[in-house]
Amino acid sequence: MDGFKIPEGKSMASAKVGEKGQIVIPKDMRDMFGIRPGDNILLLADIERGIAIAKYDDYFAFAQKIVEMKKDDRN
Image (cartoon, rainbow, N blue to C red; front, side, top):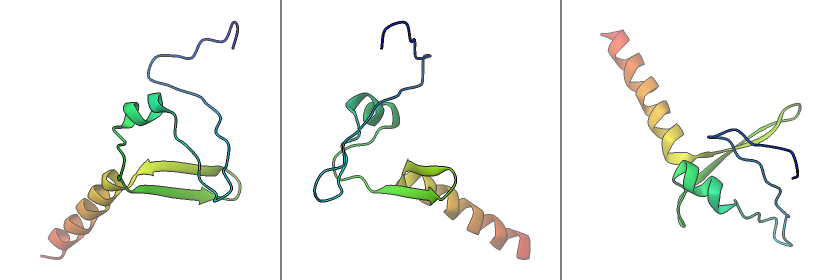
């Protein structure tokens, strides 16, 4: 886009939805978040805010820490 500079650490792209509902995450975004073929991706949807995509392992580790903290609080 002419005259439009995207700040360092940010990215913007469009993706076309294929016949099977698949999209391709652009390479620069996959590299930015360490997403590799075979990785599980978490999709978060909000009717007002849209769809967010996150690496599943990152959120799973975060949720696991929350569960462990709650266990510690009970003792």
